[in-house]
Length: 161
Image 1: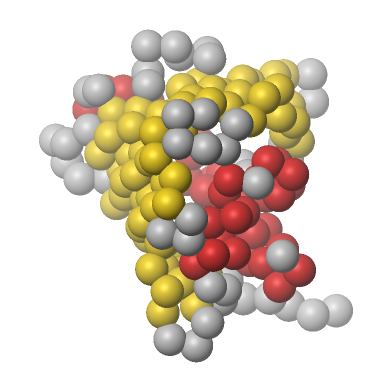
Image 2: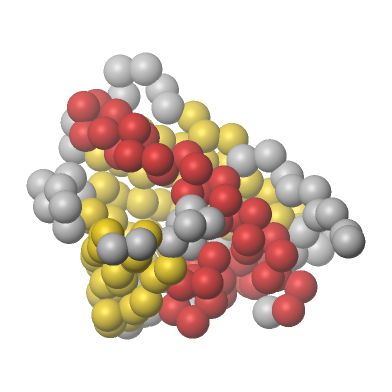
């Protein structure tokens, strides 16, 4: 049995600001990590906590496109949707993100990818919510678990992409 170690996922939640920042390094070039975020067949395998499954309703990965997917945990369903505002392959993703269970809670997400030496990359994702209370609800929803577990699964997938 092999054991894979995973880089640390840093989640910053600045006091008094409606922002969440995620910083994560991957043992893969930025182009592969970008693809894993915009290719729905790849994204639905790794996104979210370990105990959910997700499927795409629609996914138009282009500047001006939109997306929606549904995640399931047992009998419970959770749907999410948004718009791709800007896609720059291997470098940047700007999108909105909304949980249908809280439709007034849209956030703007800006993800930057930077190649590092040795075929690695750093991802820095900043989510801006409308209010600090909305941000706190987003964080309290289990977001940290989903991000950490999802990125650990992505680590395992990247060599095959």
